[in-house]
Image 1: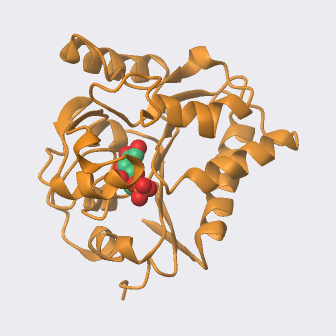
Image 2: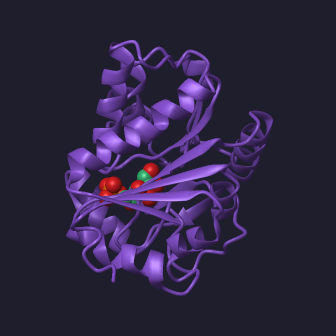
Length: 242
Ligand code: F6R
């Protein structure tokens, strides 16, 4: 695991965007795994700027998002479909046909999950998977005690995750209790992984991810086994590392 410690959120976002830009410049038809939440917002802003400056061309890029809330329609402002469109896709020249996000309102969950896994394989696998991390160590919505061999599946969200994500909703009752997420296996099969973390709330999870035992209790700890995982974390998120 490579660990890059930077001063703050802004520096984290800039570094992450540079790494993603390099990936796209070196391989214009890259397959990117994308995350949502607060953490990658700055990175997406930086990528939009790099695109505006003519430095990155997304026309051949394919994306797969990690997850989507179950039972939220794509036009719901809290859906990850809405998030991606409003924070990245509408500002870049990506072909929307090449963007993939699990369908949270599917009537056949098993089929949706299986076809998501298949689409990733057909696209040639993920070149780079961008990750945030939950304060409980989750990656994607793979909550503590997930099976490491899991592929895309429906999960029940932890109470902690529901509380943490309630800041985006009018009230906690409106936070979906389930989500469709790529599994740990999908994430680990990515050729490179970039995990971002900022702020003191993530310090415990980062310490366990880096120095703790590799255990499904801390899903991100599995990244210790990945041959090409990089963590870009700010000083506060790194503050519990020895
Ligand atoms: C989002 C995702 C989650 C978040 C994590 C951190 O697609 O998969 O694992 O990355 O919950 O969320 P923030 O960045 O809001 O702290």
